[in-house]
Length: 204
Image (cartoon, rainbow, N blue to C red; front, side, top):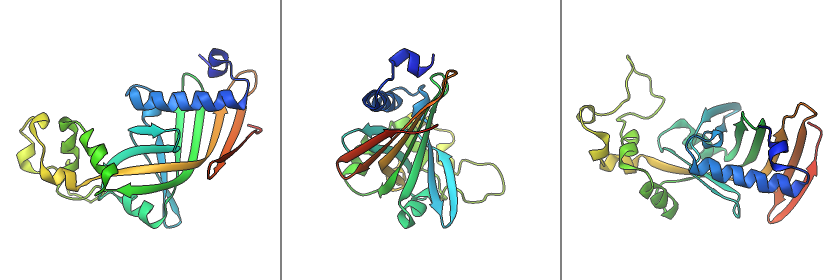
């Protein structure tokens, strides 16, 4: 079903409320299309994109959080250039969100600890690879130590996993909303300067 028909989008306030609801649903529901956005970073003058998992969203801070291996290339890319963009698309509602802002990396602070506590034991094995993500290998491998290969992941909480864990907090200052409709597309743009918001309809 198209979002415009279901939620009766008529004002910019409707767009904002609908966007917040959909982002929150993306956090709560692992099957929701917004649960897996695309994160774009800059590697020098070359853009790099990848799918991430949306772990948390705060509308008051306009902050989105995802987890990653602290050794992954996107961490060093963000440290060198914090400008990022996230792309969300809902194929059933024909709705797209593009969020632009800056990101920060958290490894040894309260944010990182809070995020780590929410990582299930069964998922902590993902941070136990012996070599960093993106490293070349001679054959397909997860990079996990041999001792993990024959043990149930839910029983493992290796100390190396915490050391390799990082949280990425993306705070956006611009949102571009697009709704595809057979009767004519709709598009709106929002910009925040500190706590002051400006919003307008724009041509799709």
